[in-house]
Structures are given as structure tokens and as C-alpha cells.
Image (cartoon, rainbow, N blue to C red):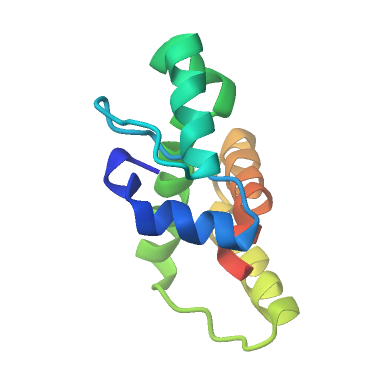
Length: 123
């Protein structure tokens, strides 16, 4: 997530959920007693922003966004199925239809994206 998400209410919600977030902290960021944010600030100080980003996979978000943008452009932004199982099946079928004529690497990227970010998609 980009630096625009480096806000107290976002970090508080992440903490409340017991989740871990990879949010780039603002350059002038100071520790505020928010556990995840404070840890991130210390890690960035220790490793530098590039080292932190590489370790956390920060740059991979762009690949995920591009994959989902492509799927949404072809099939729209809505999933019609109501159950989680149905949604997963619908997305997999969408994948197959989209990637029918595409290279193997593309299939791997989209599959990785869905598996890696399914917790964001379905909670």
C-alpha cells in the first residue's frame, strides 16, 4: 500500500484486526505507539527503504494490480456468485477464459495473485 495509507486510523484498524500490513511510512514518519507502524519505521531506519521494500515484497503490489485490472477490464468489476466457494470458482473460470491464449507465465502471475491476496479479497 502506498504512503497515502500511512494514517493513524488505517494502522489502528490493522492492529484491531490482528493483521500485518505492508504500508510504506511517510519519510518524516515518527513513532506514535501503533505497533505495526512503529515496527515499520524501525525496520526502514535499519534497512533503508529499498531493503525494507525488497524484504516485504512491497513492489509486488503493482503486479497484482495489473492482473486484476486486466481481469476487470475484460469481465467487469463484479463477481456474481454469492458464496465464497462460488466466487473462487467464478474467478478461476474467468482466469481460464482470459488466459486461454496467453503464455504460461501470465497464468502463473494471475494464479499467484489470487492465492497471495485471497485474504484481502474474501476477508
